[in-house]
Length: 243
Image 1: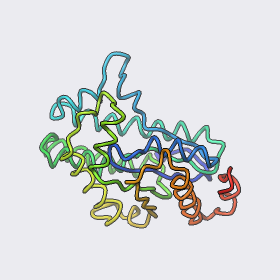
Image 2: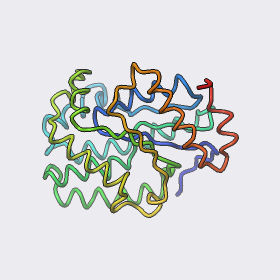
Image 3: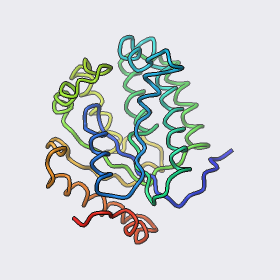
């Protein structure tokens, strides 16, 4: 049974390391462009059945909770994306992360670090491939916020989010390498992902308080969306501010 959502909207995914500034970036983009933002379902991970913070448990005891968390992350991401798609008045849907970053960065890293067993990793890959092919909407493009791990660490410390404030630099460096292999070099990815366009935005420089940097990023995004078959219609719909 294939995904039943029929839509001409384009699905673009914003990817990046922990602390790269994805949420800040999405809020910034929304100020300039008419498109739908679907944030990472962080609230669901922090409040499972109103009693459990699965994200916190993952960080506190990764070996125990890695497979459980990655499974739940997949489900909640797909549900958030589908719900957004059903209620999207715009031509473009912009997602914060995806099941692909889970697969190629976070779950893979758990396996390589030994916090996910070989059996768990095999099971994860098998059901992931089947569900992605059968039930998920394929992305039209990725926007990669390419950020130095040291900068990510500084931003994590500055934002002081309880669940991930103690993430070590070494962990961020491993995740950075995974993002580079996947989005820049496209090593070991599904065939259709090799053809999926990627816009790489260098984000070491602070853009939250720099209007010129914001406008530079937005101009690149608008240009990036021109790869679409309906680029003229999308151009008319997304632009809300003349840069």
